[in-house]
Image 1: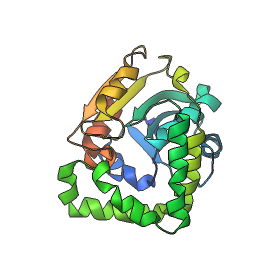
Image 2: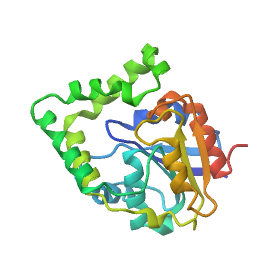
Image 3: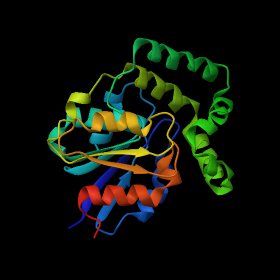
Length: 232
């Protein structure tokens, strides 16, 4: 029987962030990788996705996509068979963190979006990945497709999101996946909240920085397939 898997990308990502993952999934998994529209709340993005998705599906959110996935779960819990949190966490920003995010929008207003993203590449990838020219080119193309308009909308959505940790209550199969060298969501931080979720599966893939779906797509695909029971 085919399992329906929905993949939600992160900040500065289009659905291309999952290209390698989708290619590595077993035939028993039918994956749909989404593009997040330039809307300014995770709730609005979630509603837009839910309007065009199957009645029942497995749901995986990467980074910012995890915030959207949790909003989807809040709006339609009966449709979500299981939830995977990929290099992400369910908590809200502190007031200081939210203000820091919004301050970054000044760079967008000044036309420095691509410069800003390029400057952060070392914090996004494992050091070994920085020498992988095809990977760096794929990421650059993805960022250009994503663009400053979506970035600004999604930063506002990120800053405004609520804490939804209560939704990860173990009532459905849950996967918390971390990347070995993720500076944004370190493995130990993800393990701390995953341990409080009844029955949650925990996986660490690597070597990888925050962009684990691009750096280790086969390992991410394997973790997702096992979580869904579709590895065979």
